[in-house]
Structure formats: structure tokens, C-alpha cells
Image (cartoon, rainbow, N blue to C red; front, side):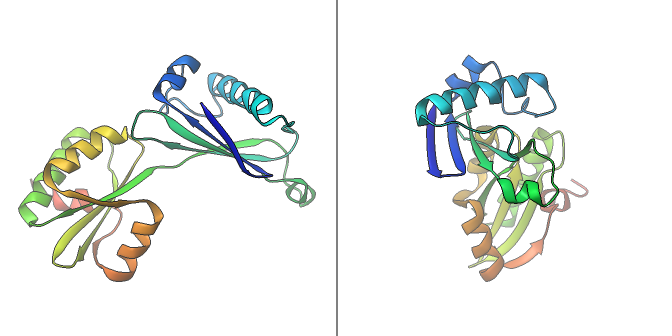
Length: 193
């Protein structure tokens, strides 16, 4: 478990697959309304108190963001929103938000892209949030998912090349690419197949 405090009001905790196993939780099970998740959060905050040698005030409003990692762990971002939020009439307490993993792959041919979309549809139980762009003569599929990243990436890698991940790639695609489908590209590519 890696614990850092890049800012006074922010703590970043990186959990490996082994850490998740030790805490007896998976990314998919994390939900702050679940008592087991709350147990894990308080265990992590107790360890953070020890490592950082400072008290973390649970009476302040705190946002907890979780992002899965490719290796099967996750990163938790704890942000204490502070006194100003409380004075504005917002009740104290913790809120948890799970971010979806986001990554993009390029495909040189429409047949590779379509074959990949068909496989994605067969593997994923729920529709993926996906955007399709045309950029520099290639197709670029950007996928957001809360499924295990490794399995989705492995499937995408069979048909395309990874171009980048995260917000920077998304911004680049929006600025320089031609948007062909937004939000449900995989579903649109597989209509009738």
C-alpha cells in the first residue's frame, strides 16, 4: 500500500492486487453504502494517519474517488472539502465516486474495428461508454469501463494499437479528430451483426 499526501487536503492511496486481497475487497464491490467498504475505508484512513503522522478529521466533508488499475488494484483519492463547504450548508460526511478507466486504441481498417466491437459486445454484459473518431486516416475507439481493465485492454490489443489513456488523450481526440459516434460507438458498430 502506497500512501502519499500531495496536498494538505488530499491523500492518495495506491492499493495493489495483494492489498485488495488482504483487505478482502474488490474494486467491483466498493460502494460506500456497503458496510464492508466503509470498514476498508476506515482501515485505510487509519494506516494513512500512521504513515502521514497527522490526524484526518472525519467530521469534514470528504470525497473519495476510486480508479481501477490495470494490475488489479485501485487508486483511492481522499479529498477533504473543508469548512467552507460545511458553512455553505452541505452536511458533513463521506461520498464515494468510482471513476471509469478510460483508454483509446487505433485501428487501421474498418474490418479490424468491427471485429473488435463484436468481441467487446460478446464479452461485456452492459453497454460500454465508447466514442469513435477518425484521425490521421485511422479509426480511434475510446472506451470507458469499470470492468477489469486488463481483460478489456487485452481484447482491444488483439485488433488495434494502444494510443493513450486518460483525459489528455480524450482532449486531443476531441480537438483533432472527427467524431463519428459518441457514447455508444461499440453498439452502433455491431447493429445487425
